[in-house]
Image 1 (cartoon, rainbow, N blue to C red):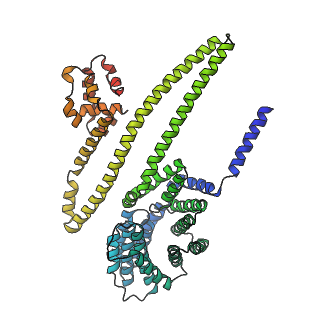
Image 2 (cartoon, one colour):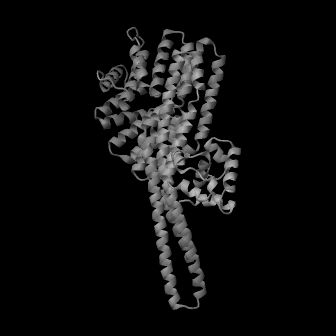
Image 3 (cartoon, helix red, strand yellow):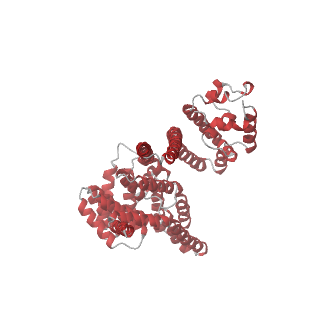
Length: 528
């Protein structure tokens, strides 16, 4: 009867807990469910675009520009390369002056979303608007101006002393508001103008109206929700901020979008509140999106996200160490209890002895686990920061190479571009990587070469001085074994050498070992 009452009480507590979730927790749960369905949304997205592409191939020339514009608008928040492809199609299909003008605006917008603000600004200023009479074209031109100056103001990668970009942004917004405050874009521009002037509640009210009257367009909904979240954050309401960031991220998944910052901002907010697991998960999704969509500039700029990952990992390690201390304390307490019981009952002596032996073995295993964990932490801390540094440098190189190849293609033609692409640049990258690997590994295990030599016969030993500068292939194979990579194909892939080379060197070093050759590699793994 008592057991039934206990189980009933637990069920009631669980039910009460599920019913007492806050609105933000419910919004986060809904976001997690939506993220789990991202592949379905992407399949639907690609199916729609496949249908448009099929329509584009059979449509008459007079309709192709409009279909290409639909495809550009579908991709410009998803993939820079795909959007760029359809901008090129727009240039090819544009027939009227209106289509040519709109095509120029899409080129500027693509440069903004690709974070090439300098070219976007130059192209924007080069457009002659003196002959524009169409009100819709004027609004489109000013809307692109707002995007250009907003991006430069938020992420000032370019700066000219004689330009005040904040004033230019305000000027564009005022001119747009003078033409339109009824459409979604007009109200959005008005709300952002009010926000930057410090009228936060008024701006929030405008966005709330926008949300109530919004069309079922996920791109529009995610923008409204994101702006509302920022306003709630500025007003100090973190609960509402998380709710609207979650909604914005949900719309991003359903669109789907890769270039919006909803998940990134949500991860920062959760990290500040100590929800490390979710923050880490959302940051990884955000970085994967900007990489897959070719938005590397945004990934490089988001340096604080790297701190989230590192800090989250360190805090998780600290929690693990706390648990280990608690487990050890519990074991010690249990030993005291066992000793006390021995004083009062001799009949349990044999059982207590068995228990003591089991606890002793557990303590030994715990000690080995602590040693392994300490060594793992030591390796991880060094390699994480090396890897982060190398990753950032590699992203910078990728961006430089992309710019270099664009210039070659533009100025020297396709043959020069192909020649540049065939140049063996990657080899130097691998040499630099293995040099960093050698320095990092020897920094962790400075006596590794001497320790390996002590396991080998004298004629097979390595020259310590030269090996400390750069590890030969045999020592790199042993280094990967020490780091826990035991499978020969994985070693060959990591060191970029043939599988037969790995097998040959491993067999050669086992045969030259002092003592049983089958124990040689396990002794290498135990080098400290």
